[in-house]
Image (cartoon, rainbow, N blue to C red; front, side, top):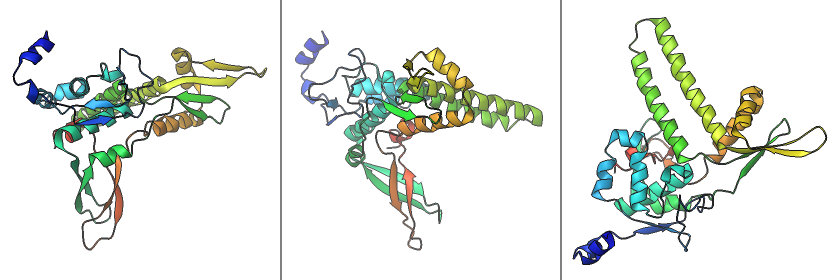
Length: 289
């Protein structure tokens, strides 16, 4: 029915049209049809934001729980039906493309020089940022020092939302803790907040592990993919192995669009060149434009 309305609406010629096309880091090879409808060209049409999309991005609760970004992606990339089930690397690339389709190719980045503390402002190209995009492999393997082979995939966007929400809650907790008069109560509250963040980090590592491969005493090769057994292993492995797993997990989650830029300090008396992050967080990336 909406199609008929569009055809009869004299303003339909003025409806938004795709401004760019994007091949996401995963190439959608991990997703079923109910999550993503893969275009024949392999590239997703990116539409600019609507006024409704922009208003949604000003809703703090919707930003924190991921609904604003999820709805934004469904609005601007119609082929994506369940954004929260995408990998974070895919979501980052999509958000950058939506920003480019909506606000133009150039985005200002502010960064403080670590040497002279001067604030420098540089312009970053959306197209240039997307050209740095690294494709995701079908899987990532790591030979651990104990002989096991870890097979992992990047975090889902849903896990990233949980991490962002936990970080926000932790910041709020730290503010409340600083106002406590009793030192023991302050320490207790701090420990509680720290444990919550550590537990979340642990859960994200478990979620990213696809399987663990091993060779038994008789030389037979086996695979463990049951999340409960993987959890039990992580809860009982030594700290060195745990550190190797955490470092590997962090490494594969840095894949996708490069989120660092080289900046030459704009202070004439300073010759420093430094690396600064490009803040693709939707709160600043969209509302700050």
